Amino acid sequence: MQAAVLAAPGRFEIEHRPIPIPGRGEALIRVERVGICGTDMHIFNGHYAADNLPMIPGHEFTGTIDAVGAEVSLPLGARVVVDMNIGCGSCYWCRRNEILNCPDMQQMGISMDGAFADYIVVPARLVIQAPDHVPFEVLALTEPLACVVRAARKADVTFGQSAVVLGAGPIGHLHVQLLRAIGAAPIIVSDLSPERVQLALDHGADVGVCAGDTRAAVLEATQGRGADLVIESVGLPQLYEQALRLIRKGGHVAAFGLTAPDASLPLNILSMILQENSIKGSVAGTGQDMHDALTLLTHGRINPQPFLGAQYPLADIQVAFDTFADRPGDLKTQIVMTQS
Image (cartoon, rainbow, N blue to C red; front, side, top):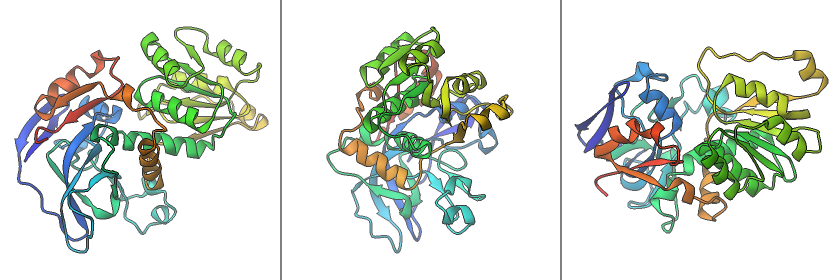
């Protein structure tokens, strides 16, 4: 099989490797589509998981079951998506379905080889069957949508709540669409790109702010109170500071965007206490989040069209990554496996 190995930051090498053989409790997935995630770009640029290189990245993937190991009853040829997060299954956090905090957790494409390859072997318990009628390019959106589902679940967002999304990139746009599906209102989105702000307005946002006074727009849209919920989806400390200024008394900040490891946030503790504000982190979707995300995509609650623009064959993965930042109009870039 062919595999795209990130040999060093900024440099992919296409290697020919043996097709892996699934062991007991494992399934061999024939990969069809893989989305490029912001985390993949951090790895590519050497800002994250650099100690794991060389490695095959890629975790937003879909494909079909090609073979199974012993004690696995999954049907061959079935379309599937896969939960990328592998916990030990027995520790305190795994028992509480907090797998992302498992001390032995591994993540496909981040701490171990991932899906930028023709085939990948995965634990069968993490495989989720998908309907045959859902296109692979849509199924590849399941994992990033699951991350957004988890953030909304942890924020306990519900209908009629005002929400601000800071950043209208791929994940920010998914936040907007999910908030709309939940019934949050009004939804305010802020971004430096007028194209992305307009796209968010076209697909669910009620108010768009581009290089303007975001706080003034939020106050105007919420009768001067501030927002019930602010989601930071970029990963900049200054935007986290802004988020705390945009919530109402009793409001909540969803910490989602990944910052640099040493980034910190000045916090007025007394104000936080007296106003009963809260902030909660959310990093990835796992378990039921994946199932819920697949259900939303299957039943058309999320419009996938804004994410289906840029597609590259595996042979051109270097170009896809090199030009990623130069294509702000592409909310999502997918790698189409050459075997397809």
